[in-house]
Image (cartoon, rainbow, N blue to C red; front, side, top):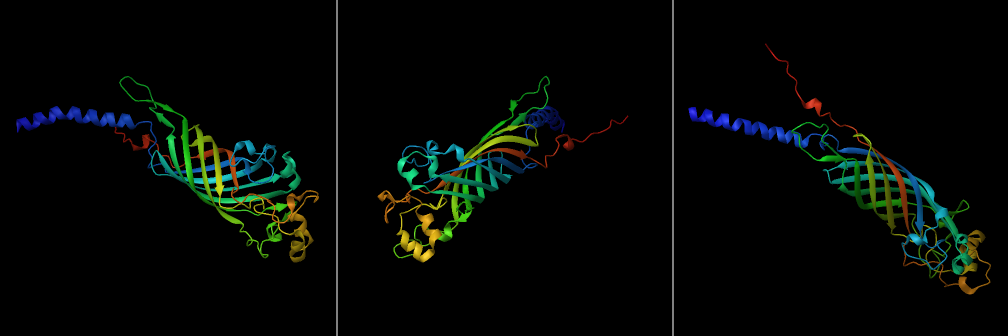
Length: 308
């Protein structure tokens, strides 16, 4: 029996030391059970890559060199993030924005002569999987002799990939283009009218700076690949302008071919767009992230008054 007491006396300091070290190692780090939810608000700009406008050279697929910088429009986003653990999160977001393009903004001969233009509002819903390459961590909240641990950082870096649904409706000077069937949609030898909703594949990254445990600000860059080539109402070939006029009216005929007719580049069957290259768009936004429900570390500590 005496030996049992001796074992307890020997092991007690080791157990106490182990528990103390465990507490110290976790001190200052966010407890993910207490802050699984985060909310984002973003404000930035949007632009697109497609047939209309672009650089003064040949069209470049998915290349920033083909972006028309004068066509950036404001975009707004709101999101909810659910943190699965320190590295992985699921983010659901809504974005409202606008994109536009005009052949008058490029000096490339064939596109400038084509003389088409568009504008469309964007309304999208996305679900993203997010991986944090680096996540903000405060480390220890105090500096005392004998306390060990790494120094925290306020910076975070994450990448994301997901799936979404986009609603769009291209216009020219306020005129809806899809109902006009500008490429002869619905007529013999032409395709059916296109849908004004499409699936999107978003991919991007986010760089953040944690101001407090409740607030993070950052930069979010996300590119969306779409399943449509009609964000700008341009995709295939020119249809017979007079047949469009006969079937759909004068406005539809004029929107189908806005050239002077001097060149054969707009004859029926000539390329109006490139159906092999689907349209895409992107956003660059400043994002504020609010993290509620953080439980105070001190609230877990029980205080006892000494009894004499």
